Image (cartoon, rainbow, N blue to C red; front, side, top):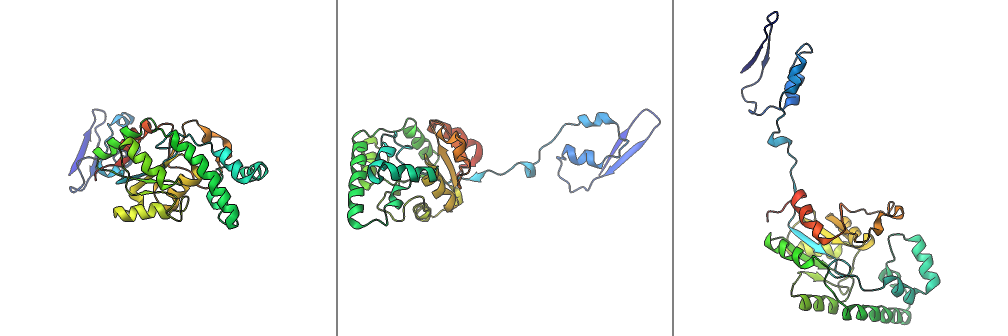
Amino acid sequence: MSIGVFFTRPLAIHTLSVPSVMPSLISRAIVLSLLPPSFPSFMATLPSFTTAANVPRKARLRGVVFDMDGTLTVPVIDFPAMYKAVLGEEEYLSIRSKSPAGIDILHHIENWSPEKQRRAYEAIAEFEQRGLERLQIMPGALELYQYLHSRNIRRGLITRNVKEAVDLFHSRFGITFAPALSREFRPYKPDPAPLLHICSAWEIQPNEVMMIGDSLKDDIACGKRAGSFTCLLDETGRYNSPEYNEVEFQPDYKVSSLAEIYPLLEANFDLNP
């Protein structure tokens, strides 16, 4: 077809030949690029159009995997005190200075002698037991679980805590994440194996899953290594500190509460099952 434009001053006609197969919605940028330089400037006010081809496709999300302690539950374990009890004050400070993202205590004690490991696990178990006695669900966790359930989004759990803690969480709060992998599953976070195991159980791809947690070194590293989306829960803003800028794995998204995850998912993902 042809588009003819007429003016009252010395009569001139500029004709643009446009193939008849072109979609009816023609972007303003394309039209203006075809006009000669002498074309009147008022045509720059042409309305803009958005074609389907210009709208970015949302990534598909079919499953969400959560950390437990500090994400689904209120953080009640004093981890610095636990690390000092296991490592001693001097070694704790030395390791902490070299690892701004945090200390991987389970990995650190793997190569210790059996007797030293036994004492370390006993100290860890004591702190974890105190945590179980004060177990509280994180504000917004139940509502987020129900929202994901309503959208048929799968819900899994990965924790470095023990199975006893996971079972208590499920029974006390009446919600169930499946699969729910605890410390007994090896290798544990930050290795991607547990997250990949869940993806395999769900028969979906890692890039259709989001890992949500409060730890850069465990949760975000696990998710990134698996090839999944990641979201960091940072209630206090601790990860705003410049010391975390150079940490190897950074999250795709960051929130300060679980309530912020609803609009995040709706805005950025295709949630159709």
